[in-house]
Length: 230
Length: 230
Image 1 (cartoon, chains in turn green, purple):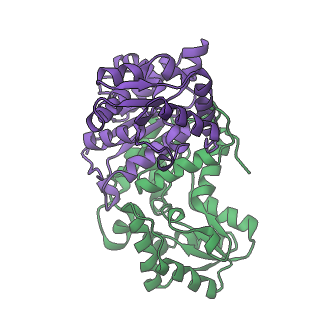
Image 2: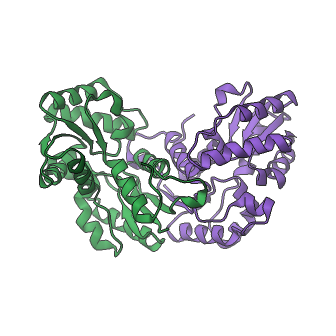
Image 3: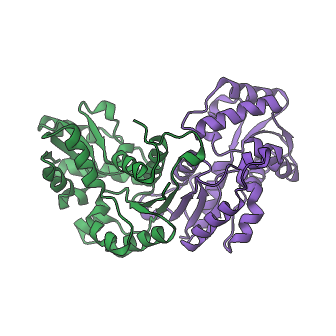
């Protein structure tokens, strides 16, 4: 099996959750049935949304340096369990020779396969939303897009920040944002921020949920040669 | 903050759990408040208990190579969230220049500080038990030791194997092993295998539980300069 590289720490709770999903989604009996994984929780990389929205410090060099650490350590491909960091995907790809997964394209393609032509409600960090990362990918896959307005987006971002600070992120205002997306026609939700699976219970949303974290984890396991649970 | 190295994959579920504990036990608000962590889930390392008990393949070279990957990637110290792998601690330490934590000594010292002179029930993998890794460390700290007999030890090992294969490990036979340790005088339990916190609910044991995984996570956070939750 090949070694999965994980460019993480954005945030650390989301990376720990991604590591857990790589284990839970792998059909294994013994330690040796799981693909090796090298995960760099590079928590000191400047905040992506702060750079994209508020002109904060640029995370590009930190992302590139972390990707190089993973490649040097034997990673055969790199996953980035942070949707907003995909704003820098091109720059990260230029820094290494190994392939780097595009979680957002993978999630959009997964949704299009199961829900062709559907209207997708996007729950994501403000940087991801402002750049239209999901909007572009979903539309390219023939899907319609419903995003929260600015006030609701602030509720989503508050839940994300709460998870980053060790909280649950479960909040009635987040539920309200999901209700509004549904009332505006969303037929399926994408969890387009890797903190959100820790805050959103898919059983309570009333519509199907596609978790980009799980889409990425499955793609990694398949690539590495691990057996994926159905 | 310094970078914590995690020599893991033994097993992968235990390593993902350890990553989660590094996050949960850190008092942080933002991503950047967490120490950077480089975790190698080196799942292909041969099984430690199989080598120690059944004369299986030797994991020493695999452990040393993984430690070198972490050092080369910038880890300033290395934690090994696998108690049985501590049978190879000296060999791992000779392979790198950075310090390598001794989880078993740390756990024994933690127990001695809170429960001086107590009788400690040891729940651990069969390799750890056969080599007396906890027995030596606990006795050196003035503690008495109660270990399962061979039949009960097989129940403990079955729960550990279940966690390695993606199961919960929660099993009445494991509860029975804990009951017997208590009836033989154990006043505190040590979870001396990093799969066991996933299988044992400390609220159901009837005596205090010290989880070596958490002891190691706290030591890592303190060393790295992260704020540790009380």
